[in-house]
Length: 346
Image (tube, rainbow, N blue to C red; front, side, top):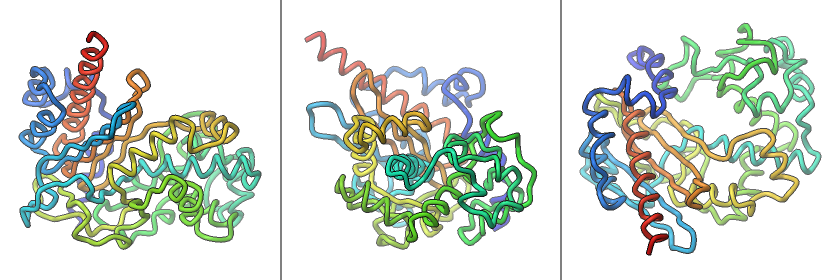
């Protein structure tokens, strides 16, 4: 499926777009949608998202002192005409980095890992295969300041394949910059962190995350592969212009919006991490994230000003849909803030 290689550069560019881009780069219909008067409810806004070209959407909202609410619209599986539903599994992509950074923080606090030790010390067999391995610290990898090339940026990388050896794509490649001198988001950093955790623990890092993060929070619907869930329970994923359903590609964690929301609340309110672990975590990584793999786009954020967690899953990518999903999310947040202001007034 070499056709997907042609869209890789467009994908990377799209992931970097911000709300400001709406005014300058957005298709005119998206700009009009952004400026359109807000509906009165989140459900109405979710319904509008599917009318704009998103096949299916799930939004989870956790407000303080209220039961969490879920909102859905569109298709769980458009070929089979199965409507979207709130407890569907979804590929959360890079949101998984929050779980792994939390695991690193716990291991550092337990003195099983050190942020100051180098890649070469933890994975000595890579010393001559990754430039600057003897200077790249664990902290630099967590913070995306290692200079290690991003495997998804490599010409050989294929978004539609789940059989590539991703690490092999960057071995022997020149560094993007000297360690610690710059920032560049690199999925390779977290692939290496997974290997470091596994090597240090003596068992797969995913078991540690299950034991230390998923089980304590009762996150029983979070898994590390599409092969761990029933295929029909996984929301379909689509790329504009193609009929392929991307659900069969194994591209990392799958979870429900509810489970991600519970995790994000715990990460931000301090209940997941001890005081020491939280200090370590906050010194090295962020508390919110987005995710993208072929057919799946996700946003997971805690909004301190209204003490609210909002998770958004959309199952259509390509043709500026990342920008559209950002607009939908921003409009949902405007609705939630208006609702909060109305409550405060009354």
